[in-house]
Image (tube, rainbow, N blue to C red; front, side, top):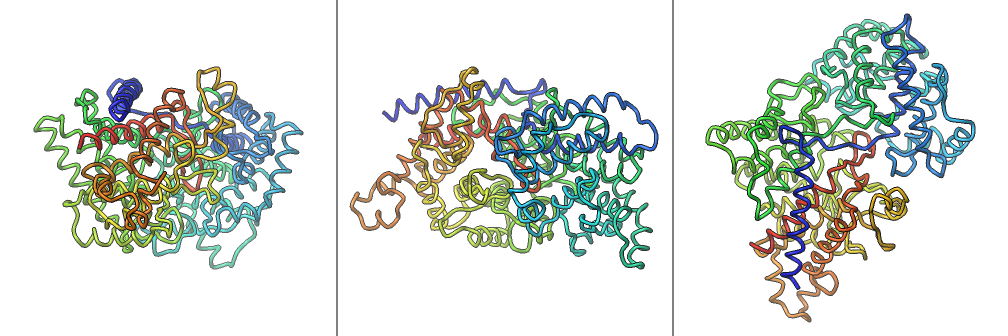
Length: 639
């Protein structure tokens, strides 16, 4: 039976490898495809509408902008959920943030001369917002973090739905200080939101009630200099972080203060106009090309039968060319890190850099001596960049060391585990290793799980994704980090949380979506008991096969030496009954094989978090994660 399973895994993996390789660009890397986003579309419609409304003179391509506003609103009109609200993606639950942004977009589109939502849609939307607690409900969603609450309120103020005094003041004058001082100035927004702080802060300064005279004078004197900061941080593409929402918030705030024709606004308009999808929507970000390519390389190279046919010198040159070689104007990051895309708006960060390092190490197996030498330098520089990023608590944050007050700037378990894997067990100092391991151990939940930063589960009560977080930390355990007891508790969590359908994660929202007529017509098959997602099942299987392989940290062979009625065996819980790791893995692998057979790996699920808990799904995640999982299974069987 096991040999038959291995052969079926081999056949399915070969199919997935072919499909993944077909997704490459001409020069051999991957771009992927981010989900269309009602949230992004709403902010873009608001920004472009505000530009037409407040422009002091006619602007270039006004007719084309009007057409894009119309297309954007047409897209939004088809995205309203049954409860009257709007979700971030086409398969997301409604949330109050996106719902408010669509309300503002509809109002601004009408003010600019286009059509908004119809009266029935508006009534349903307002009813949903009221049910969710209106402004107080919005504030509850984000707590102390003003990063997204303030832009939403500013968007509503631009639309005339609230007064500018309802928008909290932001200390935009702080942006004129050196970037090295930002973390000690107690900024009320996360490190990546400085452009919004400047533009929205200025709009509030101009339109809101007057503050204390000395502070008002300081802020008035800081307008020009902070605008220079805004311009300096803007990439060549015109899109801050390549992100539609952030760029839109900046543009609408500048437009509302009569600056729709300044250099920053013109480039922001260009970015929005060029990044609209053919269906009238906007994605949350342009693409995750570097991230997807790094994951794809590691997944393909993990196949025990990999022959390196995916490797080309042009792929290596492209990937190495994505490494940042100058101090970054957005965060002040030193050279050496990688961002999520090769586009100009990317910023080096603590997740894409480890991913890139692991991919480069895999490419060295197929590179020439000259190429290997170049890669060694890139890896060394990246590892030094990561060392400098480590926080005092031992963990790794996303962008900036020391910004620990707000959730998306704190150290995170998934990034910390990823960084350790990039170093390797022998490639990091004992001090840094001990600090990181203490951080991970300290942040392990009582049930053995870890919570990640950049991934969630919309059906989880707190929108957390312990399956993803635990799986990613366990990969660090498989690489030689953490104690066996810590790893055992993490493995225990995954074994105990496997769903009845054999997979992990997901929830009640998956089955109704998968049963849609459009998917059935596309050949997607689904069983009535489906609960799990392909993505979460794949990362769980990759982790479990890594730690329970024949030569893994928790070898199933060792557990097999214990008798079934052993007291020690019963105490571990890991190999008792249905939670026996070997059987858990087999059921999970069978779920993945069935998912590929039924075509569900072609239907991505929204497990990704963008900034401020904005949901997205990525077309290639199911492919890449499943290739990595099945490769890990075959590797574990051949150890």
